[in-house]
Length: 260
Length: 279
Image (cartoon, rainbow over all chains, first blue to last red; front, side, top):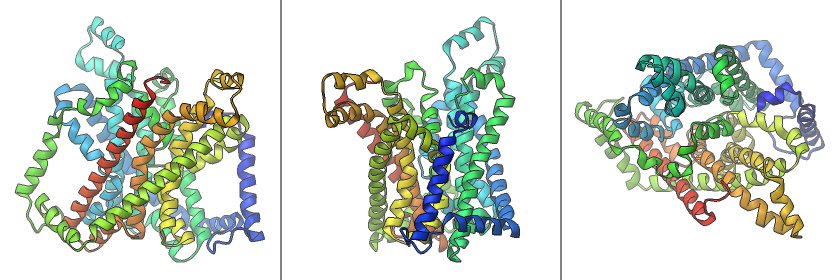
């Protein structure tokens, strides 16, 4: 959907955003919007270039993204393998799926204080939180992808006399790829969010802490600049992930109508 | 946290693996479909933890300690009001988000031009992690209930808005022509045709939004320490009351289950009333 929009450049959409920004700017100068700490877009742009020139922005961005992505990578390995195991072995599923669902239903943010207790104010804490949060969507989507294998494909495997391992490698895994990608994308955005939360509540570093700090220093323009950066970096991460997936799993993604 | 579960991705996640055989009917018994004995590992783990854990461990206090540590909060009357505040924030936020999301979604989906004009802006706001808005809202609106609500409403609106938008966009033109032929007024058209057709998408949106709204409500409370369950959690962590943190986590989990159960109930009631048509 978003890809489709990007391909056909949506001038009208861009114009609307520009108009909204102008309106925002004008409303503040005219005095329609009178929140003390709501800066006009031009100030936000200034704040952005300020942060960029001091190098604060790059440093914080790197800290947050590296923590989020490493947590996510761990989650990808754990989630895909655990999800595949659950999808492949019925008894394992029978004797553990309910536990998985029970754990998953606990609100993730409530785990942040526990992680802070266990790991202190460290980057490991951020990574653990990001990993924990991202594991669930990846695991469940992998599992669903494995289980959702078309019966006809399963029969084809039987007819061709594929063994368990071969069937997994040649049928189940490729068929589950689009579902796994959905899980990975969801997981990526969640891990970024939880990294931010971990920085706000725990480790004083990275974008999350910078946001809180800018707020306490009453520098709303820097704060909004950070918010925009966070939004854009989420989009960029997602786009990169999709581009990689399309390159590596060309066949599978196309078979799914590039769904995901 | 629009980012917690970005709506249309989640809905694909939920629907994509569902092959025809596992439609709505299967979903209803989907919960009982997962064997209860699957809870065994979790119970075993907790039991082991209880037996092996030392009661004064600062990191892994055994489950019995959790209850002991949470009891004072019940006794001094802080836990119940906190639960009430969190539940209130959640409910109000979700209700506002539902109205906002449904009406905006229907409006945007009804017009191609509006859809194209607002699309990219909505997409950006959707992927923006709500967590990043907490400090912003706190600064602009202050540490108030309105601030809490504003942060809960924003991310919870997107799933509902987007499902309504696409449902409205793909609404069969015939369905709109019939009332015109029957000479129904604008209002009747809305209440008799458009709104019933939107009920299911709205419910689907709520299914995604509800857990999100709860998470965000907790998050706001943890970060800003305004009254609520999240604030208690944050305070317990700051005081290194680890057993209490685990206990509160458990309570937050129960709240999560309650929300999930309520949404399922709502879905069942509505689908019983509406029949199984309009799939």
